[in-house]
Image (cartoon, rainbow, N blue to C red):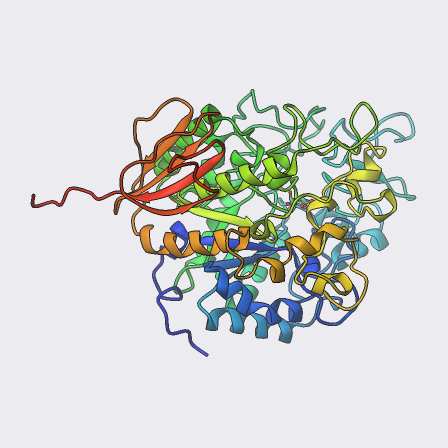
Length: 552
Ligand code: GLC
C-alpha cells in the first residue's frame, strides 16, 4: 500500500529535520507471549506510533542473537531472530509503517559479530593460521608460551579485549568475548556488508544507524601499538589512533554511500561515533554517512551554559559539513533522562551502588520536570531528534533491578560495580494494570516495577498535562513550524536560553530559580505550568512571535 502523504515523498532531504523514535524490539511489545518483545508486537502498535507524529522508527537489532549484548551480538545479518519473528513479519511491519507515513531505520553492527556467526564458528573449527581466521583478528600471545594477551588493549566492557582459545590463539573483542571484532582489511568482510545494506534497502528500509562506526579499521601492524585506555576526549584524535576513528574508515563509508545512492530516494545513515565533535562531523559528510549522533546533550548536566555551548557548537559543526545536527536525550545505553537530570553532580547513575552502598536517591518530580523542559527545548532545535521508547511517557530509570535480573554484560565484567544498561530497557507499560502492564501475557524478560502502571500509555493517553500528550502536541507543532533550518539566539538573561527558528517560532527555557517573562506572542505549548503568566524554573515554552512582514 503506497502512503498518500509527503513524508514518504522522494525528497532526498526528508531526514534533515526528522524525528526518529528508537525501538528496542525486545522491550516494546510482546505479541507471542514469551516475555520478549517481537516484530508482530511492534506492528500491533503502529497506530500508537502514528499517533505520536514521528517521521521514522529506528529498530535496535532484531537479528538472530544469543543476546550476550542485548542483540548487538549478531549471528546473521540478513535474518530475523526467530524469537522475534520472521522476515515476513518484518515485511508486514515496514508496510504498516510506510502506510501511515513512518519510515524505518535499522541498526547495522559492523565492528563485530556474534561468536555464533557462521564465519566465527568456521574460524574456530579451522584452527590457527587458517584463512577462516583472517576475517577476524586472531593473534599469537606474548610471553614465553604465548600466555599473555597480544597487546594491552582494553574492552569497553572491561577488562581486556583479548580472549584465548584452547588452541592457543587469542582473538580480539572490543566489547564482550561473545562479540569478536571483524578484520576490515579483509575484502569478504567489506563485500558482505554491502550485500547486507542492499538486502535491507531492497526490503524498503529507509535508513541505517551504524553501530560503533568509528572502530572498524584498526592499526594491526606488528608489533601492535599500545593503547591502555579508551578515548581521551581532552586529546583530539588525529586519525592515527590504534583502534578508533582512523582516517581510512571513511573509505568504507564512501563505498556505502555509493550503495545508498543506488536508491530513490537515497538511503540515509547516522553514525554512532564516540569521538570529539569535530572528528564526529567527518562521518556526517555527504559522501560518508551523512549524519552523526551528537550525544552531547545525553551526557550534559542540566546547566544553562553547557546547553548553550552544546547547541551553538553543534549547529555550526553540522552546517560546516552540509549536514543537519542530531540531538539525543535518552537511548538504550544511558540512564533515562527523567532520572539522569536529577542525579547529584558527578553521578551518572551507572554504578550499582554509590560509595555508601545504596542506589542514589533522586527527586523524581524534579527529574521529570527537567526532562520535559529538555525535551521541549530539543524538539525546537534545527536538525533531527532521536527519542527513545518510553521517554514520551516520562519513564524513569528502573534503577533497582535485582542483581539476578541483570542481563547487561557490563555488570559481570566490571565485577558487579557497574549495573549496566538494563534499567532503561525494561519492557514498556501499555496499561495501568494487568500482567506485564499490557506488554504481553507472560512475565517480561526484565521485571517491571509497580510504579510503571501510573506511567503507562493507558494512564497518559488523552490525559491533560501528561508527558505523552506533551510529546504529541510538540511534534504536531514542530511539523507546522520546522519548515526551515533557521536558528538564531535571541538576547536574554544569563539563566535563560531563548532562540528563534523562523516563522516566528521562539523557544525559551528557564534554568534559573526565579520565574521570567515570556516573549510577547501566542503561547504554543509549555513543558510545565506557568506561574502567574511567568515561566518558572526548569520549564520550556514555545511562543509564536509575530514577525514584521516583509512589505511593511
Ligand atoms: C553500541 C550500542 C551498544 C552496544 C555496543 C556494542 O554502543 O549502542 O548497546 O553494546 O555498541 O555493539
